Amino acid sequence: MSATKQGGANFVVIAALFANLGIALAKFVAAAITGSSAMLTEGFHSVVDSFNQLLLLYGQHRGRRPPDEAHPFGYGRELYFWSFVVAILIFGVGAGVSIYEGWVHILEPEPL
Image (cartoon, rainbow, N blue to C red):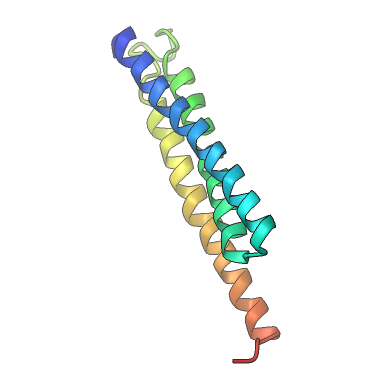
């Protein structure tokens, strides 16, 4: 990947990171004002998205390392590993929260 494309990829991920942090802040403020649990959940969703973008930036950084004896073609494909970690975290944490919420609602059902 050329230096120009790398800078463009970094810019996009960094811009998305700051946008998600701003959106998270707005959602947390809205949740505090309205008391909406849905808005609070959405705020945490935006924070998780921001964490995912940090992992992608880390993967881009590690992927730019020059070739060495152990990796004669370089480390460019390491970004795919970190993208995979992000996907696993999204599905794993989402599934864990869903299971937890389901269990809590089974133990303490809310009246209709």
